[in-house]
Amino acid sequence: MFKVSKAAAVELKRSMAHHDFDDMPIRIAAQKSADGSIEYQMGFDEAGPGDTMVASSGIDVVIANDHKPLLAGTELNYVTTDDGEKNFIFLNPNDPTFVQPSQSDPPASSSETD
Figure 1 (spheres, rainbow, N blue to C red):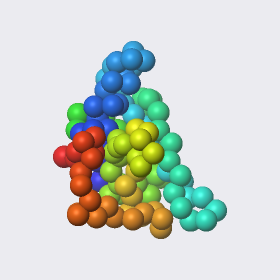
Figure 2: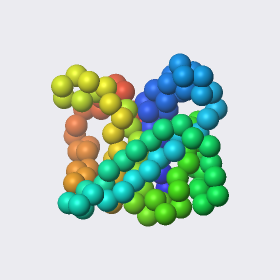
Figure 3: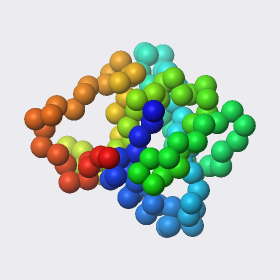
């Protein structure tokens, strides 16, 4: 099932309030690129026919049913990257480029999960 980390939920809620999208679900989409890696898109959208709604960390997530296999087991996180930028990242074990974060890595202050 798709998860949203607590850090990602905080940033999504901030963005919802800023753009006056209170309580609107976030749609997550995924597709395989030519090299087999997975590309992601997200944006605020209502659920429609052929969608599944998932709730995680207080965020409603909409996923088109045909995207569910690529997103199974994925976590959306919000972290500070090595260059100091804050970004959403997808931790997806279905992506051939995915590298499981090491348990010995110190947790970033913004990458807390459920």
